[in-house]
Length: 79
Image (cartoon, rainbow, N blue to C red; front, side):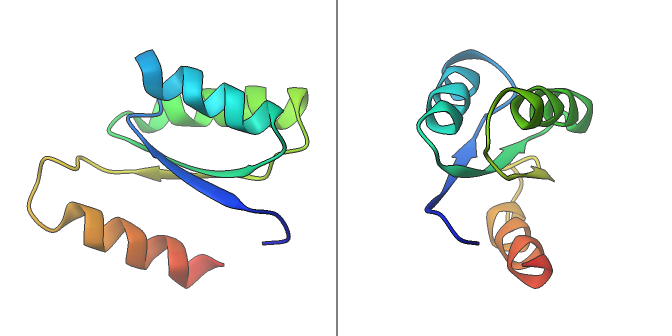
C-alpha cells in the first residue's frame, strides 16, 4: 500500500457507500467491508474506473462473533 488506506464497514449502501466514494475521490485506498459481496464488487469496479483508488473487497457479516477479527486477518494476509 502506497497511500493511506481506509477501512469502511457497511460500505455497500447508505452512509457507508457515500463515505466510500468520498474517500476514493479524496485519494485514499480502500478496504470495503459488508455482507453483500456482489454489491461490494460492483462498487469496487465503479471506483476503480472512476478514481485512482486501490480497492479491496472483504465480505463479512460483522454482527457475527469474531467476524471483524477474521476479516482483518484475511485482509492483512493478502497485502
